Amino acid sequence: MKRVLLLVALGFGVAAPAFADLALATSKNCMSCHAVERKVLGPSFKDVAAKYKDDKGAVDTLASKIMKGGSGVWGPVPMPANNQVSEADAKKLAAWVLSTK
Image 1 (cartoon, helix red, strand yellow):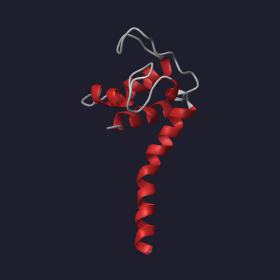
Image 2 (cartoon, helix red, strand yellow; image 1 turned 30 degrees about the vertical axis):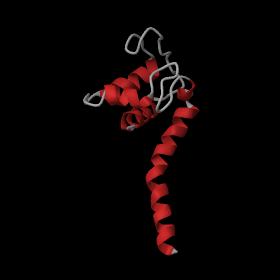
Image 3 (cartoon, rainbow, N blue to C red; image 1 turned 60 degrees about the vertical axis):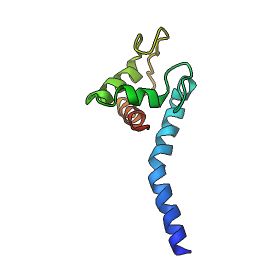
Image 4 (cartoon, rainbow, N blue to C red; image 1 turned 120 degrees about the vertical axis):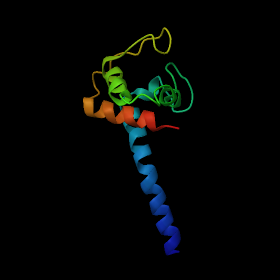
């Protein structure tokens, strides 16, 4: 029984960061236009991660786009600026998006 409880606790420890960043994305309204696995209004987070997988400066690039908005990279629909997102949160969100597989 102790072994099962330990495995469950370890499982939650590994999954907690993913849930925490999904919670942050939800709280900052990212999920209104994006989803992890499918295109909504904007690209899926998995598609973004694939596009930027070899870009060493991707966290900073995406954090800037999260805060300032952007257009033309994923089609004609612009991404609006998100003034409610701090630089620290934008970098945390960008790193999480880039970690999606």
